[in-house]
Image (cartoon, rainbow, N blue to C red; front, side):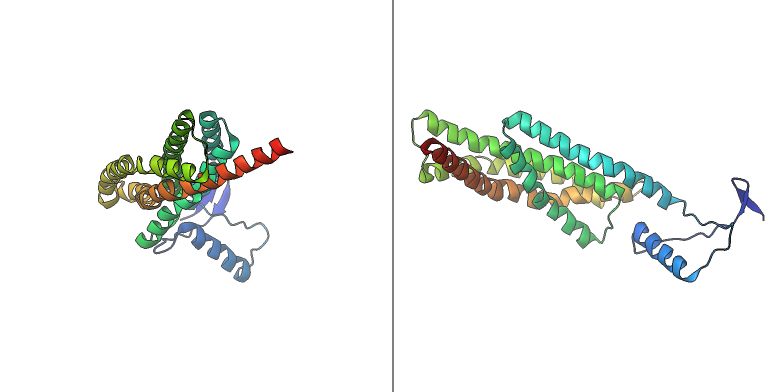
Length: 239
């Protein structure tokens, strides 16, 4: 059968990919063709099908992901009115995402558009965890300032410990509810389950590291940041 595309004779080679992600297969294919195949003048080669759709989606994600992070930072700044506290939450997000990365590795899932959407959702949940934790820490510290206590290191540690402990039970309930909603999607089968499971997988894995992040790393990081801020203010007042 003679086939044409855009008024030119064309031939099609169909491929099925198993056990690897589509992007790496096409990358290796391009390198092999470039080394071993010499195209005559007037002959061109293009890659279409699902790979073409993947490239379009990746191009959109290159815009969506930075915009999402920027929106999260702006919202954090509007909440705390301090750039350093907003940056604290943003700087701890990669640790929250490591659980999703390891879970994808254990399930042998490849990075795709679906997993990218899952990581975006996980980043939003992790940022929410961090915001609530930081608000509790600041509230506990504010209560001691209202009592007229000088914010020494023991008082600061006691306030941070109290604020973090108050978040243990709500945090556990939140994680349990999220896992209860996502596990049926992750373990389900049927039409669309392959895509939905890859969206849910980063969220399920992130529910291990994101709570640990908010319960341990954020209080410790806020303690260091608070001490550095007070030290800077003291040096400025003495100077």
